[in-house]
Image 1 (cartoon, one colour):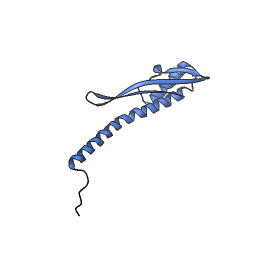
Image 2 (tube, one colour):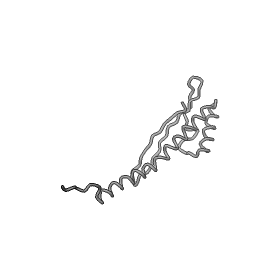
Image 3 (cartoon, helix red, strand yellow):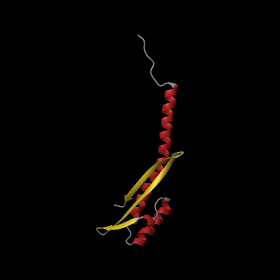
Image 4 (cartoon, helix red, strand yellow):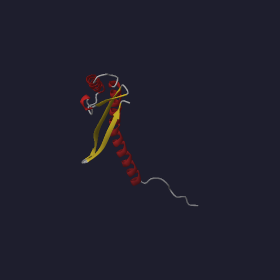
Length: 113
C-alpha cells in the first residue's frame, strides 16, 4: 500500500508565512488605534462628571495630556445634557498607512454614557 506525502511545499510555506507576516504587521499597527480609543472614552467619562462646559473641556484636556492622545481635543467634544447628566460625545477619523498609497481608515465615535 502506497502512502502519499502530506504537508506544505516550500512555496506553500512561503505564501502562508507571507500572509501571516502581513496580518501581524497590520494588527500591530491597528492595536494603538483601539488603545487610544479606550483612553479617549475613559477621558470622556471622567470629564462628564464636571458641571459646566468650560470645566468639562478642561478636564478632558487634562486627561488628554496625562494619557497622551492627540486625535481629539476638548474643543472637538459635543457636550449635551440628558436627564441632569452631562453627556460627552466625540467622533474622529484615524488613518493607518499600510504601504505606498494604501491606508486603512478608522471612523470612530463614542460617548460617556
